[in-house]
Every structure is written in structure tokens, then in C-alpha cells.
Length: 200
Image (cartoon, rainbow, N blue to C red; front, side, top):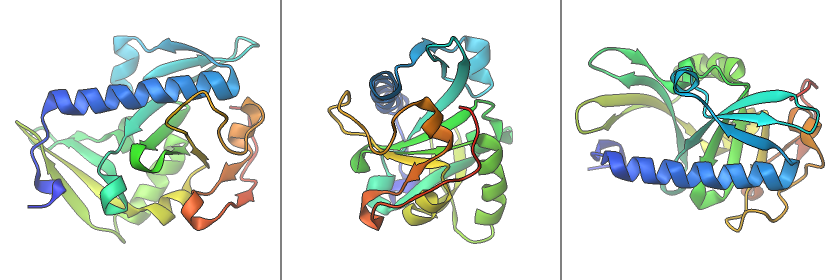
């Protein structure tokens, strides 16, 4: 039985997700000075976990996803169907935040996408990579398994997040850099390029 066939206990998923969210909150505060506010219940239903405010009072939104399995398999699970019984779309399609953060604890790495960018990529990935089911207590979720190197090459930016968060991340000097730089995962070398610039 593979980890994709394993039944995930809800409280275990919740604990791991909460750990990842706390770490990313600390990273964003320490690295960019954001003031962070949890999303409302209605905002959470729209795929938003946090509201980020910079020192000018401008607001961005973010959804966090923590993938603990990717560290073992080398593939990130990009959810396309959230509940098979009712055909509910996965977070790849439902996220309405400014940014989607995919955090892999074993790599200490966060991959960041704009949701509209991710959805366009998912259409391609579904034709190239395997789709797997993950068994939960009462339902299955489905997602496409995308290799780490493909995720790193496709992300808007990638940053190394030290487990002792609060230490400096990699390659960013202010919040505008979020939309102007990306840094590859360490196992593929350090590489930078400038995608379409824009305000975060």
C-alpha cells in the first residue's frame, strides 16, 4: 500500500497543516514585515487563509498548503478534486487568494504560485503526470503528482524557509521582490530570473 492509498486521520492532517501555517506566518513577518490577519470563515471558503498588510496598509491574500508526503516521493500533490462523492473541485481550482503557498517541510521550501497561473499549468500537467487518489475517512480526493523540479521551474518564486524561522530566507530584500524574483530549490542550484513584474 502506497502513501496515496493511506487513510489520513483528520486530526493529523489538521496538526500538520497548522504547523506549516504557523511557520509561514513567522517567515512572512520576519522576511517582509507583513502584519498578518487570519481569514474569516467566508474567506476560507473562497480559498483564502491569511490577509497580509504591508507598511503602506495594502492588502494581499494567501492560501497555505503543506505537503508532508512530497519529501518522500519527490512529487507534489496538486489537488484537483476535493470530494469525490459530490464532485467538489480541489484547491487548485478554488483558491481565490493573491498567492498560493505550497510548503514542503522536509525540504524547508515554499513554492509560490498565482492561482490563475497554477490553473493553466494544471491543464498541462494532467496530460503528462499521474493522477492519484488519497483516501480520507469518508471520501477520496484526487490530484496530479508533479515532480519537484517541474514545480520549482514553474513557480512564480521559490524560497528556502529555515525550520528556525525568523532567520533570513533566500534572495528577497522587500515585498516587491515577491513578484520580481524566484530562486530555485537548492538541489537544482541557485538560479534567478525575472518573470512578469508586478506588485504583490
